[in-house]
Length: 446
Image (cartoon, helix red, strand yellow):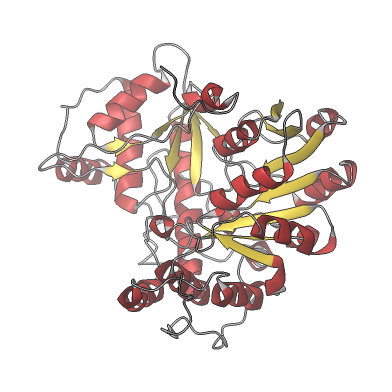
């Protein structure tokens, strides 16, 4: 008997390995800290716009996501004709590989880069090359050393997932200058909004000024629209044209498009999310390091925690945390079997994780499937909150930052410069393209 057979190499590809799905049980709260989702949820403006747009579910979207491209162009100072939108940035990165990679080509990324890059490369019959990292950070010299006459693409997540590390913009520019002109550099800026270091830039300058660089971004992270699958890419007109020729005709839904436009407009919600993430990312790093574990410095909305290879292993920690309703991300599929990735969560979730890891490292025993209400009571009674501000590095191992709703974090010396690159250009006046203008006449009939 014969049957259809996929093209060579497809069945050799390891499928994307997603994180665990939380197993909810009666009487126990579960905290999903494995997918880098924002704990603050989407903008109220985005929710309102999504609801309004939901009244038009019978209509096809306008095929080019014109309103969203115009809103992005206005916010970031870009030509909308150089922007393409898709069903998440994953969609656009995959389309890039389809358009530019062929059998016997090569595409380069780094040892612990996002899994999709390898999948998209192998799907098109090309060879995936993993350049070694330095301290879990992309190494420009190693990437350039891996270039051969067959190299066609370089994938660079900046900041990187799952390590949280980043390259300063000067290094990204050095990478671009060192690559051959026929090599496409794809900068994946999914986590750019969380970076607080002033030497970072998401790369729009390169996308605007070169013929061989693109930047992708997503609405799944700081904007909290992961369920709607909306992303965008900016690049040279000839690259955008090529990808437009092979993308799906209606790849951004009407609710997704209008929710994304509203999310762009709500800069106050973005600022609130950035502040929450910075305070609790720093606190988690300090507290977990004090337990004797190694944490890779992160500029994303998660941290990478390294465990010993014996005794107090990552697998044992993962099992204990899961028993307590705290679901982190195991990283065996990223060649990091001795590490867990922790998403910065709500105040309650963050404190529970630190308390659980303290018990894990000291060998304290807790009952399985205990109610998080009991855990929270125990946590609250065992440590009084510190009055020290988030910028004070003299915290004790038991200290904690003030709750953001009681007292905002003091502005750091470089706070103004460190956010200018990621926030949509500070145009807080009413945008000419309103997310509320959902027209029944716009969607094209199929």
